[in-house]
Image 1: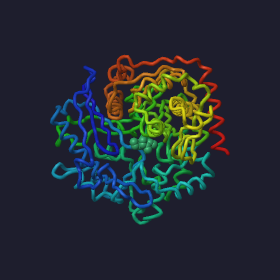
Image 2 (image 1 turned 60 degrees about the vertical axis):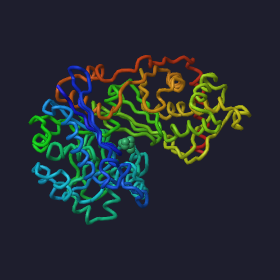
Image 3 (image 1 turned 180 degrees about the horizontal axis):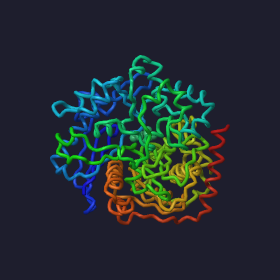
Image 4 (image 1 turned 90 degrees about the vertical axis):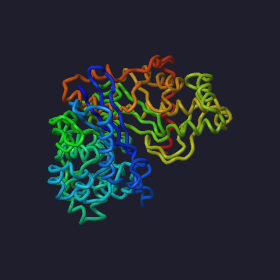
Length: 519
Ligand code: XUL
């Protein structure tokens, strides 16, 4: 039994096919938008140099990539063996369709490409994506209409955010009301691609849907106040919201005829890339946290109960495996670690040695390690704040500065995620810096829980394939996790520091942070 998982991300569209019986990945392919589809002039997957913070992509590029990808997969593997399919899309991006859409999508012919048939159904030529920051005014308007940040966050799981789809829709309505009026359907990237695959309108799942500032996280349905604050007649233009285990339909004949899939393959509704990654990392049940160390550091976890961040910095999304998940982004990630390293002209080995040479708690030397405006907590700042010995505060103690930076990052992460009421049993660490044992040790000590590195690559596509297998082939998520989400050998790090060291340090850093957020 094969399950196919698709991942339409910012720079590429990838897929993998898993064989449930052998617990292996049997085929993998990826299409890089910039390199393989240069005619869209989007070297990094989006149209560069947009005005006023606009960042758009051409949805036809995503369709062309899907076709190249399936062609490539069909050359590697007999696609008639695929018996379940699902996928994920970059979150927040939206596709605007006109009154030809519903007919065209049901009558796709293999004589023409997807793009040739669906380009005329777009009521907006390009799609705003998650990198778009042009909607500051619209966020203010939606917030004012609801009565403040707290109200928007309590209802939708996030404050009004520039990249979220509701503010984007409002900007479209305000700037081109005629094209908005001609729009009969608005899809997310995820639900758009799912619709194309089933040849009909697919629902939006609660995971990706919660990234719109339009879905109520208590009812998991469209929220009438948010809809009203966003744009007129919006409810008629949106598909249904559904839980992640919903089967959207079966694969359309277009794909059966063109790529050799068997007829009747069930397609599970798509979700956002982050919710899909939660599943692919083996963390879809509460108790398992994922910390991804990248340009920015990201924290996500299945939540035992639905609560919104009272500080309005975090996000609540639906968990594709049921319930909800949290996501919190820390802008000052790898770049901050690198800046401190470079200040002392250390290489990465010296950076790691500095962590080993200094004690847990860093003799009371503390740093708010923000080199640029931070989102968790929201603060405009351009240089770290140091508190400790004279040498340390004067940036003369390289080893202490490096430990203070890493401790500061993860003490802040602990403080900012307390609202999620998690009871962690394990942290799965991923991303570039996750291989660094000294950083992993500090994370284990601060959270007082064991840290493990997983051998999973492509967790978004894998999560999609696992969801498809769980929903359509009757395989339990536990069984799938045991087969596909393996830890790297010798990758487990147990906490070593006494719990009170970092409990006290968190209080001290909390006071420092409070003084810059509420001066
Ligand atoms: C999440 C977010 C990004 C996108 C693209 O809120 O904006 O992670 O999902 O990956």
